Length: 153
Length: 365
Image 1 (spheres, helix red, strand yellow):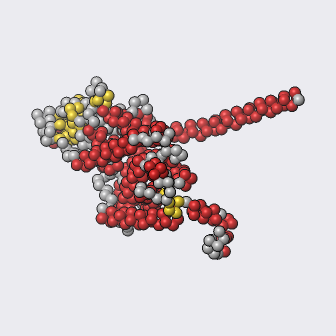
Image 2 (cartoon, one colour):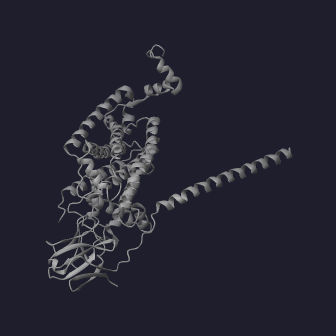
Image 3 (cartoon, chains in turn yellow, brown):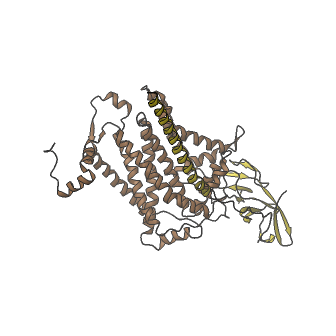
């Protein structure tokens, strides 16, 4: 009787061990499949655009007052504004709301995003609509007939 | 029984031994559809399924000409629309059937919600339907980018920015969706793979579960109908209901053909990541209410960024909708409950009003 009992508990603990073994093996197998897949799905980090300064293909005399022009700042779009007063200013062209590309509205003398109707003034400050933050401003220098735009700070 | 069953040929018996036609026949005979004043709404589930199939077939045909890269996608569709015989028709049917399918699906969703079809034992049917809704919207969103035109480019920029506003995991989610920090050719290939392989595979499984559960439990009668009408009326699914289904599908096919022929899918201008968003940009109609909400929200509400609050609200509404079988405790315990219907009607009204505003408000004001 006691012997039988002992063999039963031995059986039981053997079964427990086998179940545990099977479970951990299955878990380890799942992990070894899921880990490479999840790493595969995350795109590799692209080279961060190190451009801090860009020389535009535009000449200052080609710009009209009260107009704007999109240009490439590294890999990102930026906007060059010739204000009604004839002053050159540059900002990031990516709207701070949901990432659309802004444009200059000569009728309002404002920077405007067509996607969700966000308005920014000529200092890049968000003045109406949903954008929560101002546009990043860049420094504009005119050297001879070259326009050089660079990051501030 | 023997006298009832018609004479069968050799082929029938041969197949019956191998696939069990008798069981299928028995099941088909047994299947019934409840008849009451709201029976009409039952047609929209089957209609959604029909339009899904009509949508998939030209989708497969499009694969023969489409090239999923930023340099070639737009041009390959231009070629398809102008040079390939009936290319315009195949693409237009693909685009219009998607819209009609989503429309039918929304009717199906709201009729099930208002009829409280989600109550016990159909909670999982509802849940699988909710997953199918999400998958369908993902189909729409990923497919919209594939032509690589201006509208698609900005819709994707905004759409992938939306999970980006969620704190902590946001920027990771955005990178994962875009296949990088910006919407580029990498996003296009990613969306292409999701649209033509990942989603179809998942939908096949979830749709199979959904349809299995519908067969298992039969169609749900609205609560009131059960109690008032003690003598439950029903019609056989085969052929009575199925033939009515067919009439509906034929009508849908007619509407689809007319839409595709008279309003072929447009292509627009090629996407240019260095051009401003075009004036009057808008998403597909089924995202319009959300788009318009984000447009109207101020930049800050109680110190929280407006778009974050908006996106969280969409998430909460979606979660309440999908979990309603478990939230609606009163219906579950057999008591009358008005809240789910009020929620459904409020949601319908909100969507209609915001969609209307989205199409009528002056985009430049």
